[in-house]
Length: 259
Image (tube, rainbow, N blue to C red; front, side, top):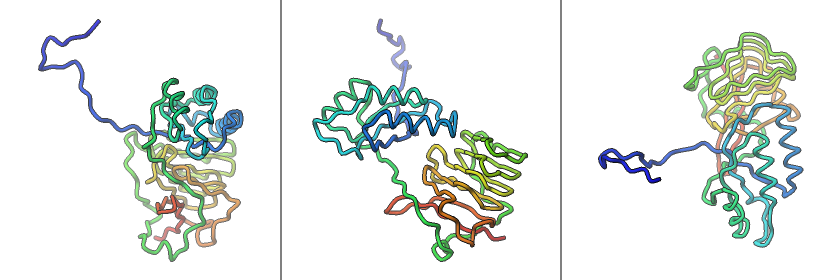
């Protein structure tokens, strides 16, 4: 049955442009079982991290030939199993694109996927143009829901996720603990566990700690582990971590904070 508005001056709907934050799954293998296994491992480490997030499947890096196919049905099933909502595909050749459209995906060939690279720490000289931020009051980023505040130490095995907001920890984050936020992370104590800021792609997010000794730090997917030791200028000191964009991709910038 067609729905017709009796008053033409008051249409029953409007069509407007809209922005939607998307994740990109950049495939590096056609082995769907390997992808499933890797996702299960990540979900075990950060349960509930993905919550019906829309995702673009990027097959560009696979370098598929025009006649090569990918088991999209199996891949989409795996993604939905892990709380992803696949919406589009990028980099597909004609045959694969036709198959993808038949499965309900749209063509996202023009989508821009942010490049990320692992980097060394920035030297004090490289960080010179940046004004130091006082340790007592790092610049907060406005969060619609207000910051989540944790006033107790986090023990090994504990995880806190501030979805859609900043996270403030007023005590120590011990080794084996994990703090995650879509915005900034402030630790007014020792950071010895994992800190993941900008978890859903916020490249403006930062990490602040009174004692910077992390097992892992990450902003918008760019990360660094304790296997690559921090320099003495920031290790165990009051420091901040931010993301610096350049022609070669995004880099973590780790700088000391001075009062």
